[in-house]
Length: 377
Image (tube, rainbow, N blue to C red; front, side, top):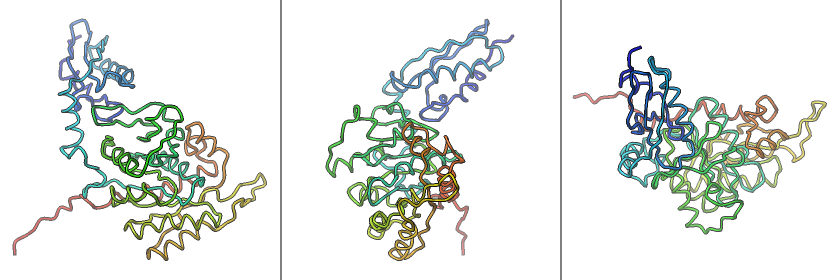
């Protein structure tokens, strides 16, 4: 059996992706020495971004599997090294694409990422459950999705999505962990246990800015921001940092909740944002005989949509109604979203329907080349 060529080995390694950055390790400069001998043994050095890389076993496994598929390779020895400071700087420059380090990519005029801020007037309406399930359902459609848990005081997204590890930090660049195909960042990943976060407005703004600018998100199709209830500092910061953000309002059918939700949505008038629609959660409870019991009344979602349409002057649709469902609550508690654990259940069907509507919206024309060239007169 002929000794495999160096090019053949590199070609095989180009199919191995870094599990956090989702780019080929050959493109990221993570492949050190690689050589094969006449006995079919390949020795390769993989350079980790940081010594404590939480997914180094995944890299080692994928590298071994890729090289064993090359004709003439019988055994693989993988040595894990660590990038030098210079190599890490080169990696950061490559990933940022030459943009300024503190720049928020989603605020760039040529950004094609749809950014949705999931808002509610009051707490307890299921905003975070809606956010996490919509994110997973959008990812299941083949979209690249990220979630920012912007509810700094009441963070819950890590539990709901089952994120079980901290982000990896490469100098001042943060690589977000991934769960269910969704990249996630939350202040809950940086505090020990269940410690409270006691910050004032400027600190909230700085944390949100860091989540948007310092985290390497890659080329996302959709970014969801789970906002805290109300119209406070974080909602204002989102409008300042990413002016193109669209607002998705979550309410319950209860009239008291609907009135407060209207205020959360009408902030768009002052911030010049668009309200993409309203989601009504906890709409009814389906009984064994097929009837529905409306525990929280009815009509709140439609009321909010109609009221915002009048206030803003454009059509604000009611995107969907989500029934009460034990499976939705159970999935949120254990990090197994209902759109995965019970996709054909009542809440799973409703949430997937809302996600389909959002997923079918185009990424927009901003930044796209139209193929037009000026002609002389």
